[in-house]
Length: 615
Image (tube, rainbow, N blue to C red; front, side):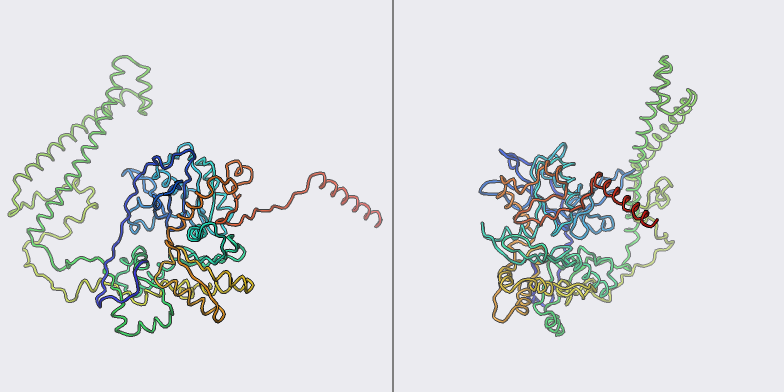
């Protein structure tokens, strides 16, 4: 979201980049991961993007996370075409063709699907060069959601300890790790964290270095809802380009062309001015083809194109014939081998082989051999004839006087014609009509442009005004005011001195100024406050988790061991400066059998006495 809201030249035309993710290389762990002690693995398990890397001890802890990929999976179709298995993250390339197949382990920002989460972890370990066969012999620092449900943590602990056999794990909140990374060392500070990500926005009060979980609030709006809202706005505005207005392109507009208005109503009034609109509108250029339907090819070009397509189809069928011939030949060799067993008198092996072939008698075997031999011989003849005809076609072809009779494909040649564009979609005219080139009556490039004007501020505004998309929730400013009102005046003054912004949805230009304006309106006259934006709102959570792991490498009070997991359950959590608050499930104590027996005895005695009194 690095695009500024400053005015550009009057013709602000921006092509869509349509960035395609490059597959991640399988890295080697190398000497980085092997030392006197196992080096911790740091996993920032975000609902939009996952980041993984090593926490290397030493003066230089290393560069940014070695692995960053979208936290989505798509299951490929197996079968005759040899479809691949599940594809994860950057291995998917472009997401739009697979949008309907994409699956995420997250519900909002909480992982709930154990199977898909295992795919993400497998992908991370594999591409970091960690062998997950047997066990992953590295401590793991893993981020989790604010006030994460015990079931989700229990599921994650079970996966890490039971499936991967890790020695220890530590859980922490991504926004608190980012806060930890940006504050001075060994400083216990208080403050308010506003963290906005792909699915949710959280406001977290920090008192003396610890999370005040009772007063945390969540708004169920983030970058995902902003992209969906922007898509609906532009699809209503340009109904002729519905298919081209994809979520990936909307995310690109949000990241590079949107900004937060300091005063939303005042900014909308500016956009009413034609000059302001012309100078600030961003024209997003959709891809298009300059060839019109009316500008047909000449007859020679059509004929050459058909010849090329027919040649490709013949080559494809020739390859398939060869593959089928090879399979039939292997099966024939197998049958002939079984027949030799019969001729050599090895009856036991012959009957065993006959049962494996699911045949009942030697006569049936002989019948199969005859049929398969005839099929193999026929296939060889067809391949030989196809090669001869293809050579004759290449040597004797005359483009200027094509023989239309030879271009008619046989039924066998067009058995998979759907893989190509139609070869004979146009009937061959008896008399060629003169070619007429249709001149466009409008500018094609301008027709394929999306004018993004007020949409630049309307989409990101939803976290301040959820009512724009019909959500009955409070915005960031109202929620901030509500949290502050739950504290005494002196604590409020302490909290607003350190308002910290982090998360990918906080990277819009103008976000810090807008938060300062909202605080100025809600705070008392002439009171002070300070707003700080994270140095890298996207990656600071991973950097903070890495710093925390290095600072607490030898501190056993913050790492959950396998023994503790087995004793106290998967929902167990050791608290630290960047963690959630551990609230164990308290089950009602069950009374012992002796106590129940005494109580039942007293009850029966009392009922008997009552009966005697009545008598």
